[in-house]
Structure formats: C-alpha cells, structure tokens
Length: 179
Ligand SMILES: Cc1cc2nc3c(=O)[nH]c(=O)nc-3n(C[C@H](O)[C@H](O)[C@H](O)COP(=O)(O)O)c2cc1C
Image 1 (cartoon, helix red, strand yellow):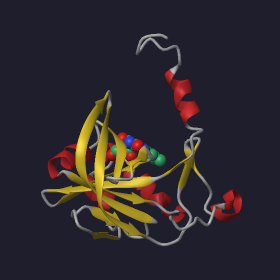
Image 2 (spheres, protein in one colour):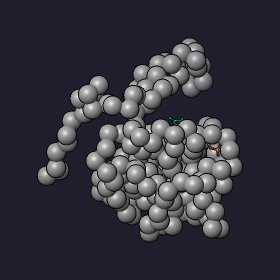
Image 3 (cartoon, protein in one colour):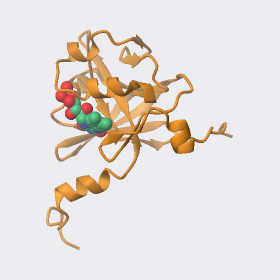
Image 4 (tube, rainbow, N blue to C red):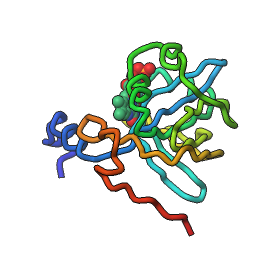
C-alpha cells in the first residue's frame, strides 16, 4: 500500500469518479451574534442512531464554519426537487446577507435558520470537530427534527441536478414506516 499522499489516483479523476455517487442536497445553517450563515452541503450522513448523530464535511474556508464553532449548534435543511435555486444560492460566493435575502425560513430550538419547504430539517448541537485536511468533519447530535412536505428530493449526480420530475424518472420508493 502506498503511504498517505503517495496515492497514484489523479485528483481530477477522483473527483469525476466520486461524482457518480448520487446524493441529496442540504443547506447547513448556523446563527451567531444574530447573524445567519449557511452553505450548500451534500457531504452529509447519519452516524449513529443512539445517540442520534450526523456528520457534515465543511471546507475550512467556509464562511459559516467560525460561526458554527462559536454558536455550538447548526441545522441541516434537506432540499426538495423544487429548491434547486436555493442550492445554487447557498453555494455561491456571496455575502451571508445576500444568501438569506428574501428566503422563507423559520427558527427552531437552536435559533439556526430552517428553510421553509425543505423535506426535512434537523437541528444539532456540535459534538466534535475532526480536522481532515482542507475540510472539517463536523459531528452533531440531533436535538430536534421536522418533517416537511412529502415532495421528491433534490438529487445531485455527475456535478448536476436531477430533473424536476424524478417521480417518473427515478421511480422513488414510497418509503415505509420504521418499526
Ligand atoms: C451540490 C453542492 C454540494 C456541496 N457540498 C459541499 C459540502 O459538502 N461541503 C462543503 O464545504 N462545500 C460544499 N459545497 C460548496 C459550498 O456550498 C460553497 O463552497 C459555498 O460557496 C461555501 O459558502 P461560502 O463561500 O459562503 O463560504 C457544495 C456545493 C454544491 C453546489
């Protein structure tokens, strides 16, 4: 095995390969000193059920990261297929004020912005931050959840969004109630 960093996999090819991993799209938000911050995130996963913990991977350059650390809390809004424009907006290199201008939102327990129309929202307290090169792996414990409309999710694949009528295209499962 080559040592870390001595891998022969070209970064561009790696990126293209990983783009074949289809994901949902979320907006991670936090609020500190009465100011909202947020960014689009697809590096999101559940880690443990008990306690309920999730992980997001956030670029260390991200504007939201210092505020997230300072507030010790954040929220994840899972976007619906109709929220592509919000995904683009929160991925833009614009000021936090421009990101949030005119966005319909409400607030839950942590004070972080929860985007209206999201198919689900989770609010978390920051448990641990694990440094990972130019990203921070942010582990959060879920303290509150909301189920949004039963709409199809926004999906990201090969660096693009799935079309707006995924019901037919993807034959989305209806889901089942957990035990
Ligand atoms: C679909 C999609 C998924 C993204 N996922 C992540 C992610 O998981 N982590 C991350 O740090 N940035 C991710 N980004 C990029 C950030 O949203 C983007 O860099 C944003 O500009 C950061 O906000 P800032 O410029 O205000 O710091 C993603 C962008 C898109 C379009």
